[in-house]
Length: 522
Image (cartoon, rainbow, N blue to C red; front, top):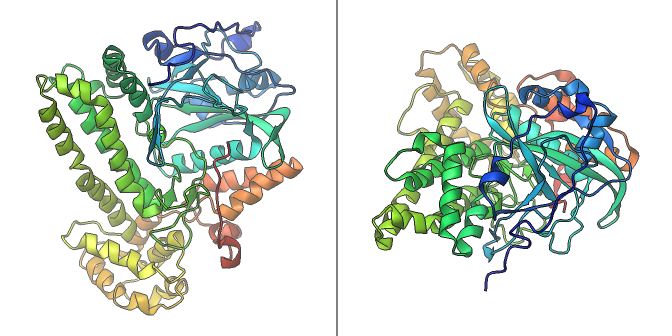
């Protein structure tokens, strides 16, 4: 028996306290299409009132993108808004419902256990963006949790999301972080906080799974139409829009995962409720950037068997897409004249293209990272062999590509020293470097120009795990936000190397990084 959605038909009535001062009331111009169009996929709810809200970080650049008045928000009134204590007019706070496969096991009802969607705004580019809380208290989906967030995970999501954005990777982003003046009880007492998150939408593969598990084909059709209109309008009017949706999402996810892999990013918890229909990275819990290259790298404390290890991310993404196809099957069958076997065959054909699309995207990124300006048949082997030369040598993934850019600055081997110093045994490079050198020298590109192009795509600064932990510890334990602000500033210009910032480019000592784990933050 599938559990019924708690309060599915709006049993809970929201008594939202609104801000009456004109400046605050006019900051947001909310629309609420999700709440208006998708009845049954959420519960109206309101944020818990907090004791002493204090705005500790406002993302001025993002506020500008959204067309918001950052000056009006960077005030005590803004702290009231971003804590949920007082909400702007037009806010309709809802907890979204979704299901999901978590580490391979299906849960037919998950949902926002500590999050609330406030509404949608149209940004300066004319794009619809969700604004949501994370850590705003219990909801009917909390499953025994307190619905709160601690300051450390909130600041972590802010840092990593902004780093990903600057690296050109589609991502949700943090608009604001507020401390609540309350204690959140985890392994120890921690300062509570609320994150305000911005996304193209918060619709997930798990949203579709939730509807299909309940056998509600009419709502499934409404949800698919809504997603197509919002995220894939080019599919409207096509003969088979749901097959088009499966294909388009597969392509977006292939591109997204390729970008993760190109920078050494490990999400850590690639459950189907963490795969968005918009193609954005979402939920920065146990994520981390790889330091020493190894394809089996895992940081997440809950990923005991390496299901979501670095090298497993592409096949897991395709596995998640297969679960999406299963959820869409009633609609795909309709588009196949009621023939389910034919629908499955067509869906499998689309899923079968994922690996090729992923490899095309990954190789395109690797060509740029390696300084290749033309395509050749052996480029895939050249790229993978560079990674193999790193394996087992204690080589830092990010630094290896950056130092390769230095090597490219000379037409001969005279600039190889910095790269070779990264290797425990640089003989691993001896077979590869001459192949790469012959390849780039065959292209009519000046060495300095090639090196400059490589530095523009190979970051020198990433959110190093130990630097992130230092910044969060200072904020959480001492109320000192200076390390957080410094790290954030460095990550805003990841490709511009400065000698004074060399400490932010270096990985942690092996003794410190060994056994490093990340946690969900719930």
